[in-house]
Length: 338
Ligand code: UDP
Ligand code: MG
Image (cartoon, rainbow, N blue to C red; front, side):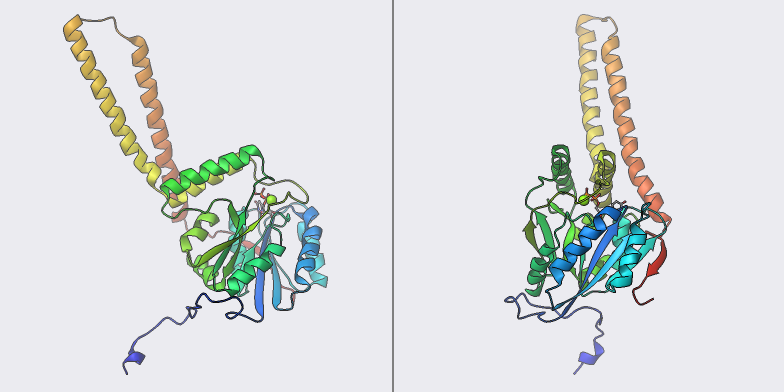
């Protein structure tokens, strides 16, 4: 009776109960692959032929390939355009410069039109056949299907150990834990992509944003192979900065540490001062302790510098966010129909 007085948002999808495989969301599905590419001219051919191998026989999947050329300086764009002439599934977004993988992914999610979207690397480290398993899980009613790496054998020891410690630290202090051994390779339902697109921040740590939005999530396991061609674009320094970005994006805990550390150091100094006063009272004036003085001065100096550094990190983020600059700039979008 009064129901027409309730105004409901219309853009939310109707809920799909978790059901037996195939009974929900069966039939034709539009899949967008989002592929950020930065100097990947050597991997493109192998990537596209693997995609063809996997999806040729899948009559129920309408495929769209959204390539984001993230300021490549090699022939990546030319090769893509060449392929697009024969292959109308390619959509190419050419960014005005290298904005980094996170920004390129954001651009891709914005351009992708599919009912389900899967970000995937161009170097075949994310095996395309895993997507078929992901789609099966999605048909069961899950909205996010993570690609979970069962081994990091293709990574160096240093990379996998530092990654492990990063996750431990991050998950201890951030509100939403990041699943370990999970990259950007994942299936997302349209509702998840739309949710991600509403997040306004311009510094985008995608793994954190993915975790933050939530939704019904499951995972499929896969072995991560070696890169087909070329070199990884993430060296040690870039990964370190990436980790800092992750931690400061999703937690203000590091700011709070200074309160506790400051309090502890002050208490210890106070106890030490009492000790010196008592000792002077009992034993008389001692020779001035140059060494302990220096230690105290430099130690506290160091602590203060680190504290200022942490404050600066957050202040810097606030500054950059406050400028409200776009995450990326597009030079041109090449649609197959053009
Ligand atoms: N990539 C990008 N912009 C960058 C760096 C990387 O678009 O600034 C792309 C790259 O072309 C590849 C994917 O991101 O498709 C993953 O990069 P990479 O293989 O170097 O990373 P790793 O697998 O070593 O973590
Ligand atoms: Mg790679």
